[in-house]
Length: 286
Ligand code: SIN
Image 1 (cartoon, rainbow, N blue to C red):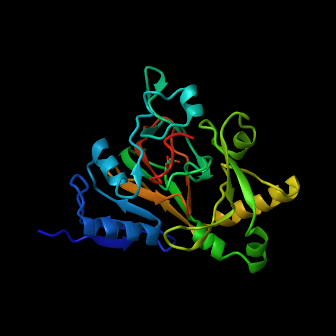
Image 2 (image 1 turned 45 degrees about the horizontal axis):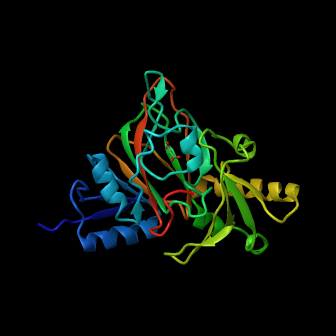
Image 3 (image 1 turned 45 degrees about the vertical axis):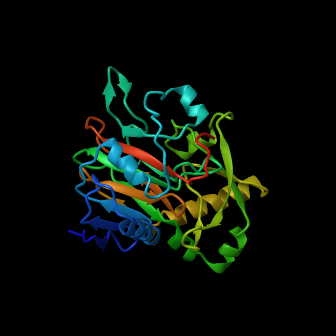
């Protein structure tokens, strides 16, 4: 029997909730096209109530580009941070024998976009909820198309051709850590205003956690402008807060959204499985 895929908005800001598809099975070509177009139109898709193995999640990631199938967990040490491999990770605060089983372990995280410190950032990220605390640990998504479109024309003109430097340290959870980041960590340069290759819409491309500075302008002027744009892009009218339920699978578009995380009780377990999606031609390392 043919599947009926049901698409409902997640919020007025962005996102769609998708029901009527069982992602344990391969997805037919028509449904793949529908899902990709819905992803482009809504930027964040949530598939509640999926019971997925890692293999199912990677197959899903591959519907949206090149799913990064390497295993970063076993090699998660300082060396791995610097070689910048792409692959599967757990986002978790769980410790086994005193060792974290994943990354991005505890508490609140500032807005960021995955892989923006690379020349070729991740197209998308998929996150699958395995253990969720009783409160908090929401993922916030901000709509950077809407934030760009709401800027005054004078600001749009001012930032149109600016270029930023972006850095990420896997231990950084706030801007002070980013600014102090080890100089050997990889940095990329990106346009502050980008045109999304699939939608053709203009979007801001910056985040409080990862954008270090704007090149070729006076540093204090650049910092003032960045702080103004961070505040603007994080206004509640551009942000959707996702309260996770176990078995939610979410995919988001890193090219036109930022995400952040709210605090959660440190004595409760949180565990999500993350596969990123790269541009098909992107290198597998920096
Ligand atoms: C992430 O930043 O990739 C993880 C977000 C989260 O833990 O909610």
